[in-house]
Image (cartoon, rainbow, N blue to C red; front, top):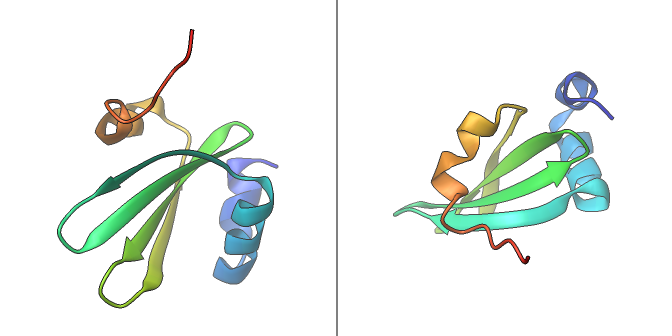
Length: 79
């Protein structure tokens, strides 16, 4: 699956694909949101989970590693 194909899907289909194919990478929290990062093949999906409302508000997909900066301190790499 490509990033382009993922972006063409409806939100529910994106979520199902994420649960089936996504690999959990890291999490981070801010005041209102918990952000959960997944990787699907050659791209990433960030889940914006609203903590108070207990719901997913946004799925943001991207391929650029530059957008991983907020997660770099949370990603554990075993050598």
